[in-house]
Amino acid sequence: MHRLAKARERLGKENAMMFVSCGDDFRYLLSWSPLADERLTFLGISGDGAALVIPSVNVQEAREHVGGAVELFSYTDQEGPEALLLKVFGKTASRLHTVYVSDDARFDHVETLRSSLGWTAPLQRASALMGPWRMTKDADEIEKLKASQIINDQAMQAGLAAIRVGMTEMEVQDVIHRAFMANGADREAFIIVAAGSHSALPHHTPDNTVIAEGPVLLDIGCYKDGYASDMTRVAYVGTPTDEFLHVHHIVNQAVETALAKARAFAEAQSIDHAARRVIEDAGYGTYFVHRLGHGIGLSVHEPPSIMEGNPIRVPVNSAFSIEPGIYLPKRFGVRLEEVVVAKEEGAVVLSQVPRDVYHVKS
Image 1 (cartoon, rainbow, N blue to C red):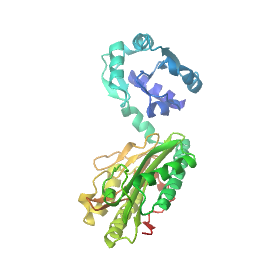
Image 2 (cartoon, rainbow, N blue to C red; image 1 turned 90 degrees about the vertical axis):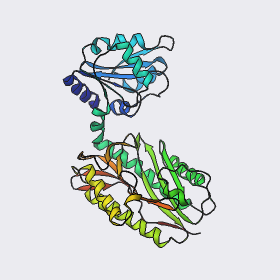
Image 3 (tube, rainbow, N blue to C red; image 1 turned 90 degrees about the horizontal axis):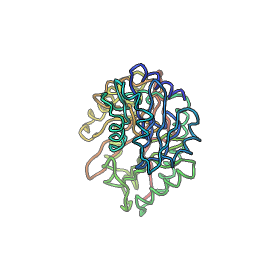
Image 4 (cartoon, rainbow, N blue to C red; image 1 turned 45 degrees about the vertical axis):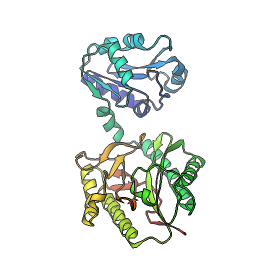
């Protein structure tokens, strides 16, 4: 529970308190998170200690997972949490300089917290603290990211090998899902199968479109031991056109250029700029419509954002995606994505699946 101790030390210095709701920040601090529903759950942390207010339906599970790391206080559905919040946190809340609350906490839960404690201290996003902490991965987290990516590689290979003329996007999606589960994933994170002109839609939702000659883009991720993976590759049914191969070559060059730049302490915006410059110089700049990448860990998307305007220097052992793309509306798109861990000597790529065009007979 060294992360909890780190949070207590920081909050004590600021005379602040942080309220963490169910989710990835909660899991980061306690290596477990209860099921989130309409019932209020908050882990409250200050320099004085840490306490968990939780509905009674989840208290036995909490005891098994967190033991004596935090004090547990439970309420029944009939009682509600208001009086318990005041009892547990009221004394500390009255003298705070700052209150941090989870970014994704439910609005009604935050209002219940505020009305119960009546604090007057400024309210801040917990990500101001949690983001930088979660950005730097420890050795155990890196191993979990690698394990997740191994499963993702296996599922990607299964998906690419399954593509046939006459299949639907959703049928390929099902193959990938089953490969995730067969190879030990906790669950899928997402599966994008985008055939034909759908490949020009960066976040296409697979449907019953029948695969014919042309491109098929696969962007997939899963969770293993709570940690996410992410990767994008492209296939082509039939003989790829010269234009498709040209665009694929440019995007792959952009990946290679970004990989060469993506070492620890590089500015996030400089990594984006390096890849974007390749695509712009090739005349496709207006068709690269998103940031270069995002951090990854307990969440598929977390800090750092690898994009123009973000001057943050990526820390040693930060993990993030590099995923340039060119999207020609109503025609086709190519995106290639790697997840890397930033080291002082350079980027360590986690996937072992080649970025080549995967050829499928028509």
